[in-house]
Length: 182
Image (tube, rainbow, N blue to C red; front, side, top):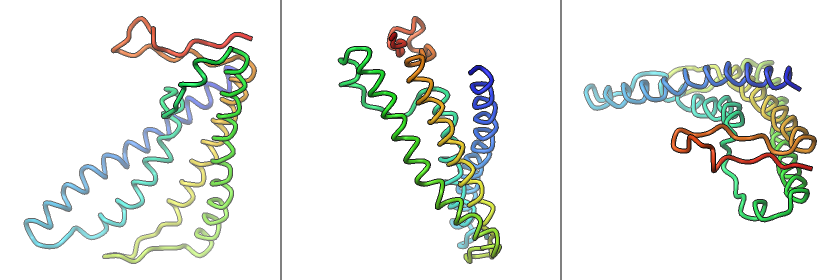
Protein backbone atom coordinates (compact mmCIF):
# COMPACT_ATOMS: atom_id res chain seq x y z
CA UNK A 1 0.00 0.00 0.00
CA UNK A 2 2.87 2.38 0.82
CA UNK A 3 4.41 1.82 -2.61
CA UNK A 4 1.15 2.80 -4.30
CA UNK A 5 0.84 5.86 -2.09
CA UNK A 6 4.41 6.87 -2.99
CA UNK A 7 3.70 6.28 -6.68
CA UNK A 8 0.58 8.47 -6.61
CA UNK A 9 2.42 11.16 -4.62
CA UNK A 10 5.38 11.20 -7.05
CA UNK A 11 3.22 11.32 -10.17
CA UNK A 12 0.90 13.91 -8.61
CA UNK A 13 3.87 16.11 -7.78
CA UNK A 14 5.19 15.78 -11.34
CA UNK A 15 1.81 16.58 -12.88
CA UNK A 16 1.35 19.42 -10.39
CA UNK A 17 4.68 20.96 -11.38
CA UNK A 18 3.67 20.86 -15.06
CA UNK A 19 0.31 22.33 -14.09
CA UNK A 20 2.09 25.21 -12.34
CA UNK A 21 4.11 25.94 -15.50
CA UNK A 22 0.87 26.28 -17.46
CA UNK A 23 -0.64 28.40 -14.68
CA UNK A 24 2.36 30.75 -14.79
CA UNK A 25 1.91 31.00 -18.56
CA UNK A 26 -1.76 31.86 -18.06
CA UNK A 27 -0.87 34.65 -15.66
CA UNK A 28 2.11 36.08 -17.52
CA UNK A 29 0.94 35.38 -21.08
CA UNK A 30 -2.50 36.84 -20.54
CA UNK A 31 -1.06 39.90 -18.81
CA UNK A 32 1.45 40.52 -21.61
CA UNK A 33 -1.23 39.89 -24.25
CA UNK A 34 -3.58 42.40 -22.61
CA UNK A 35 -0.76 44.94 -22.36
CA UNK A 36 0.14 44.42 -26.03
CA UNK A 37 -3.48 44.93 -27.02
CA UNK A 38 -3.59 48.16 -25.03
CA UNK A 39 -0.25 49.49 -26.28
CA UNK A 40 -0.09 48.34 -29.90
CA UNK A 41 -3.74 47.53 -30.55
CA UNK A 42 -3.10 43.88 -31.45
CA UNK A 43 -2.61 40.68 -29.48
CA UNK A 44 0.49 38.51 -29.26
CA UNK A 45 0.08 35.65 -31.73
CA UNK A 46 -0.60 32.26 -30.17
CA UNK A 47 -1.25 33.42 -26.61
CA UNK A 48 -5.00 32.96 -26.88
CA UNK A 49 -4.65 29.46 -28.33
CA UNK A 50 -2.16 28.34 -25.70
CA UNK A 51 -4.25 29.93 -22.94
CA UNK A 52 -7.24 27.80 -23.97
CA UNK A 53 -5.17 24.64 -23.69
CA UNK A 54 -3.50 25.80 -20.50
CA UNK A 55 -6.79 26.14 -18.65
CA UNK A 56 -7.67 22.51 -19.33
CA UNK A 57 -4.21 21.27 -18.42
CA UNK A 58 -4.09 23.26 -15.18
CA UNK A 59 -7.34 21.61 -14.05
CA UNK A 60 -6.70 18.02 -15.07
CA UNK A 61 -3.01 17.89 -14.15
CA UNK A 62 -3.73 19.60 -10.83
CA UNK A 63 -6.35 17.02 -9.79
CA UNK A 64 -3.69 14.79 -8.24
CA UNK A 65 -2.49 17.49 -5.87
CA UNK A 66 -6.06 18.15 -4.80
CA UNK A 67 -6.48 14.48 -3.99
CA UNK A 68 -3.23 14.35 -2.01
CA UNK A 69 -4.47 17.15 0.22
CA UNK A 70 -7.99 15.67 0.42
CA UNK A 71 -9.13 19.09 -0.76
CA UNK A 72 -11.92 18.18 -3.16
CA UNK A 73 -15.10 20.07 -2.45
CA UNK A 74 -17.38 17.74 -0.53
CA UNK A 75 -20.54 18.06 1.49
CA UNK A 76 -20.14 15.91 4.60
CA UNK A 77 -23.19 17.02 6.56
CA UNK A 78 -24.88 13.61 6.49
CA UNK A 79 -21.75 11.45 6.59
CA UNK A 80 -20.56 13.15 9.79
CA UNK A 81 -23.80 12.15 11.52
CA UNK A 82 -23.83 8.51 10.38
CA UNK A 83 -22.59 5.59 12.41
CA UNK A 84 -18.98 4.71 11.47
CA UNK A 85 -19.89 1.62 9.44
CA UNK A 86 -22.49 3.55 7.39
CA UNK A 87 -20.12 6.49 6.90
CA UNK A 88 -17.45 4.13 5.61
CA UNK A 89 -19.90 2.63 3.09
CA UNK A 90 -21.11 6.08 1.99
CA UNK A 91 -17.53 7.36 1.57
CA UNK A 92 -16.52 4.24 -0.35
CA UNK A 93 -19.49 4.59 -2.69
CA UNK A 94 -18.92 8.31 -3.24
CA UNK A 95 -15.24 7.80 -4.14
CA UNK A 96 -16.25 4.88 -6.36
CA UNK A 97 -18.78 7.02 -8.23
CA UNK A 98 -16.21 9.80 -8.60
CA UNK A 99 -13.73 7.27 -10.03
CA UNK A 100 -16.42 5.94 -12.36
CA UNK A 101 -17.14 9.47 -13.61
CA UNK A 102 -13.47 10.00 -14.47
CA UNK A 103 -13.42 6.61 -16.21
CA UNK A 104 -16.46 7.63 -18.27
CA UNK A 105 -14.53 10.77 -19.28
CA UNK A 106 -11.18 9.02 -19.80
CA UNK A 107 -12.34 6.40 -22.32
CA UNK A 108 -13.68 8.78 -25.01
CA UNK A 109 -10.91 11.26 -24.25
CA UNK A 110 -8.36 8.54 -25.00
CA UNK A 111 -10.11 7.68 -28.25
CA UNK A 112 -10.20 11.35 -29.23
CA UNK A 113 -6.51 11.77 -28.30
CA UNK A 114 -5.54 8.77 -30.45
CA UNK A 115 -7.49 10.17 -33.40
CA UNK A 116 -6.08 13.65 -32.85
CA UNK A 117 -2.54 12.27 -32.78
CA UNK A 118 -3.15 10.18 -35.92
CA UNK A 119 -4.23 13.22 -37.93
CA UNK A 120 -1.85 15.63 -36.12
CA UNK A 121 -4.79 17.87 -35.27
CA UNK A 122 -4.25 21.60 -35.00
CA UNK A 123 -6.37 24.64 -34.34
CA UNK A 124 -6.49 27.75 -36.42
CA UNK A 125 -6.36 31.08 -34.67
CA UNK A 126 -3.81 33.79 -35.21
CA UNK A 127 -1.39 30.96 -35.85
CA UNK A 128 -1.72 27.28 -36.72
CA UNK A 129 -1.39 25.62 -33.32
CA UNK A 130 -1.08 21.84 -32.69
CA UNK A 131 -3.52 20.52 -30.08
CA UNK A 132 -2.98 16.76 -30.32
CA UNK A 133 -0.41 16.84 -27.52
CA UNK A 134 -2.83 18.57 -25.15
CA UNK A 135 -5.49 15.95 -25.84
CA UNK A 136 -2.99 13.22 -24.98
CA UNK A 137 -2.05 15.00 -21.74
CA UNK A 138 -5.74 15.42 -20.90
CA UNK A 139 -6.39 11.70 -21.41
CA UNK A 140 -3.37 10.76 -19.29
CA UNK A 141 -4.55 13.13 -16.54
CA UNK A 142 -8.03 11.60 -16.59
CA UNK A 143 -6.67 8.05 -16.39
CA UNK A 144 -4.38 9.03 -13.55
CA UNK A 145 -7.28 10.68 -11.73
CA UNK A 146 -9.39 7.56 -12.20
CA UNK A 147 -6.62 5.35 -10.79
CA UNK A 148 -6.03 7.72 -7.89
CA UNK A 149 -9.73 7.86 -6.97
CA UNK A 150 -10.17 4.09 -7.38
CA UNK A 151 -7.18 3.52 -5.08
CA UNK A 152 -8.63 5.97 -2.56
CA UNK A 153 -11.98 4.17 -2.72
CA UNK A 154 -10.25 0.88 -1.90
CA UNK A 155 -8.22 2.56 0.85
CA UNK A 156 -11.38 3.93 2.49
CA UNK A 157 -13.15 0.56 2.14
CA UNK A 158 -10.27 -1.31 3.80
CA UNK A 159 -8.82 1.19 6.29
CA UNK A 160 -11.37 3.96 6.69
CA UNK A 161 -10.81 7.64 6.00
CA UNK A 162 -7.18 8.78 6.12
CA UNK A 163 -6.40 11.51 8.62
CA UNK A 164 -6.21 14.87 6.85
CA UNK A 165 -3.03 16.90 7.40
CA UNK A 166 -3.31 19.68 9.98
CA UNK A 167 -3.76 23.11 8.43
CA UNK A 168 -1.77 26.18 9.41
CA UNK A 169 -4.96 27.76 10.77
CA UNK A 170 -5.62 24.60 12.81
CA UNK A 171 -2.28 23.31 14.13
CA UNK A 172 -3.93 20.88 16.51
CA UNK A 173 -5.78 19.22 13.64
CA UNK A 174 -9.14 19.46 15.43
CA UNK A 175 -11.12 19.89 12.23
CA UNK A 176 -9.22 17.20 10.33
CA UNK A 177 -11.02 14.03 9.27
CA UNK A 178 -10.64 11.29 11.82
CA UNK A 179 -10.18 7.76 10.55
CA UNK A 180 -13.29 5.61 10.61
CA UNK A 181 -12.76 2.48 12.65
CA UNK A 182 -14.53 -0.76 11.68
